[in-house]
Length: 302
Image (cartoon, rainbow, N blue to C red; front, side):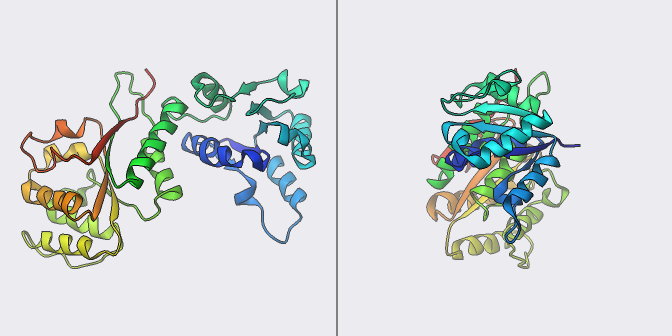
């Protein structure tokens, strides 16, 4: 069962909590409770806060001068100390209470400190399968590139120790918090094993229940749908390594995708694979020489 984590913070640190702390904890498997999601209008705030904190297994205290100056935050901190269920996280220079320093106390003033992240995530029973700074860097780079209309190959290499970075959770985070319109097609699913099925899944990813004719007319429906969209589409293709086992996809499908990506500028792909994109396709393949595709690697723990 996931550990229930209560986040106690001042809203001056709200961006860091929302953009870094919350995604890492949730992707790592923790059940996070935070005021912006749990509190309900019409109910007394302190009572709601106390109830959420009491129902949690651990309070994460995000310490800063603003936090220590806030009566509400100090209330949460004192309750956490009394319950002896907390971990202190230093985000800015401040005089943390001795009671906090005597227990697990994580200095995260430097967000790139992987070892500090490890301590925090371990205490919260959360595991990203990768160093938190690497996971966050991959997230930030993907967001930047997709917003610039570049396609991205997210490479998650398989390691000998079977380390498994939380790439699925990363994708879910991207869809929820950055690109809610991004569709997704899993090439590992049986329904996408044939070209006709793949085309149908690509349309269904955007709620388009169009009749898909047999080949070669299936590609006409695919092209017309994306070309007629008022805005370009972002599409995640997961387990792209399967293309080497899918001769049914053949060259015409990829030529159509290339045209939508490079000529029409109507489609941007986020391609997940274990091997690099260029290693999965022949040198003369329509997709193998795409220039507006960036490779981003997410490595597990060595």
